[in-house]
Image (tube, rainbow, N blue to C red):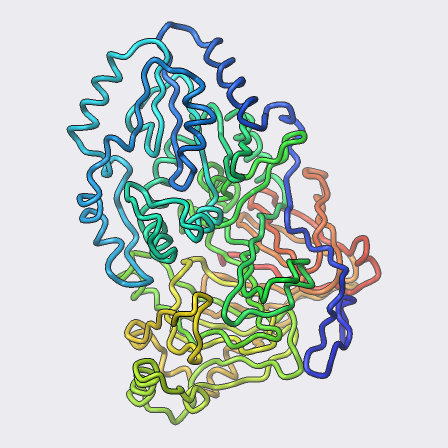
Length: 602
């Protein structure tokens, strides 16, 4: 039995150590040495840099375009940069949008009146502009002279050609925080006082899709990238240096910046292992590798620029994903790793994910959330729910779920759903359509496909959300996708610890641990006390050190700097890396380590 040094017997119920020691890196950065002097920080230096660029531009007519990603603090950029530039003419894109009423009507088929779900929009940024208004603005812009500033969301739709193009970007996690603080509105809508979950839904189904299509079109043309993630503390980097940094990132292993969030079922494990704020009631989630949501930290000299990691996919998809994965998924990162912490917490909601056909028809998503639970840790009494009892009647189960929801009665989950004991290093496979949830005293590394939010909650154990209100339940959707044939024997034989040893050598073994045969993700688990040799084989790899304190990832041909990973850290090895090795290192040098790797089946 392998014992992680983090853990000792705290009590009979949970065998994890509440230890002050943690080497989990919450702020991993990529050191961009070659472009160290191409970034500046603060509004004063940002303004001076842009002024110098304007002075060095040829001609008496200069167009500076500052395109905003939805979610930036527009007033901060106006006061810190636009107003001090003292342009002869300014054009703000918000003045040329359609009316709010028109935009609400335009986007309703995507936003819908559902509390959680919508439909992925096919709209583009130009669809938000009033045709007559923007035509007049373009005519006025054509006649303007001297220094001209075009700014706001979709600014490149108006200016089209600029002498200086600045992109003010914003990571999605910070956007969500601003929604929660009622600080920002959605694109073209004055709704900052709306419920944050509705702001998020509109952003997810509309704003981000629209803005990302424009971002992908222009990313190669940016002269500067402006990071205003931290209020009143901007960072500015030259566009060429920024793109060089992205090129460097896809040539080596790297981590994105994890973020943590509380929940009604949250636990205490991540507080200790990830060194989080002990005064918080709990932490339920950690998005440790969801590039569409996470950030990258790029270090230029003494300045650390925060940028959405999705930009890496937009700019270098083939190098990151590999040609075959990109051909299948386009500019999307298809693998997600995240944490679900119920240690000393509660059960997740009883839930099911939509089938591929259902998610495509109802929500416009090309693939669904097949997933798995890998138990990083488990208490002595850990359990999870998975699959259905043999003798259940589907109509009775759905009726009881609806009665429990509508009449605030208790739903007897164990009458219908299998409850299984859980132990550390179990791997539980959860094909779409399978009823499931993690129970209390589990620390789950969730390995899944990445369609984000499409979880149909069937029962939430009669509790309230963190806002004191019931969380949305989706029985109508869920009842249409449940796999009623996923019964006890099938679950036991096909979904729980379906592990096969596929290779071994001196000091190491390799196992296939899943995922399910119909899923596009496969996982391999390596036990090792010596160096192991791996290869991306032309497709992106995502890995997590699930046992042991520390390991080092190296290039056998010294193509990248050695990369150190710690217990529970998720990291990405881009397809372009090819061959790489992993071995115990530092505090893990005398340990037997375990790492799990996920990749897209070829």
